[in-house]
Amino acid sequence: MTFELAGKRVWVAGHKGMVGQALVRRLAAVDCQILTVDKASLDLRRQAEVEAWMEANRPDAVFIAAARVGGIQANAARPGEFFFDNSAIATNIIHGAHLTGVAKLMFLGSACVFPRICEQPIPETAMMTGPLEPTNEGYAMAKLGAIAMAKGYRRQYGRDFISVVPTNLYGPGDNLDPAASHVVPATLRKVLEAQAARAPVVVWGTGSPRREFLHVDDAADAMVFLMERYSDDDIINIGAGEDVSIRELTEKVCAIAGYDSELQFDLTKPDGMPRKQLDAGRLLAMGWRPRIALSDGLRETLEWVRGVLP
Image (cartoon, rainbow, N blue to C red; front, side):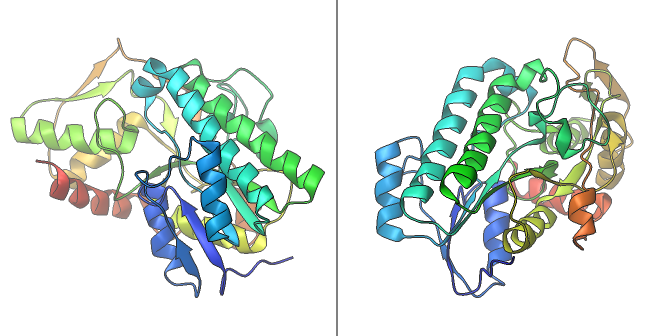
């Protein structure tokens, strides 16, 4: 069963975030009407506001890319905020989509929904099989709840609501706030700042954890691909198919920036999950492939960071 986006009214919820921007770029190549709304006009945490906006605008399809996001430090410091905001956003949009008869909805999960220790690469079936990573438990629980809600509305109401789980994403438009950023933007920023100061690059933890990284434009392409071709209760992973250690990532960024730096490891900082790579076999078997190599994507994103840092 396919769902053509051409000719549809498509709401990208969270269009100003990194993923939302990439979805808008990708959907520009599709003959559809893209719907967006700013935070100032609609607070997605307020159910009545969301339902009224959806009733007035009547989207045919919805991508839920809106979320409260951050790295280890932000998640550990503000677990209640991360739980409430993400739960409210997803709950309000999914229920509003049901009430207004949205034909297709995609919820964007996160790799943190998987247990801290589990089979690697991580298959979709690993979800709910063990304890979560404590540093982002609030965020992960909100994502798990939304996945369960989308699945429940499929089963009870026959809604074509699906959930995808992207791996760690990076690219232009990422969050560069040192207190809230993920590992790639944090690494790009710290390397550039260390280079400017001729100082060593400080890596959080041991540098040994391994992570998989996918350029956000590849992720958006996979999301559109799945929106049109995937319809099932089960989550489906979106991944790149390979991982690198945090140390290797930092060395790669230093090389791209042209900075031959000594690395220092701050062992007072947490490592997080030892390894996090998704098994994207189901997606790849459908015929989709990423196009942007990690080195190329990091180089592009580094230039974007250079352009926005003071």
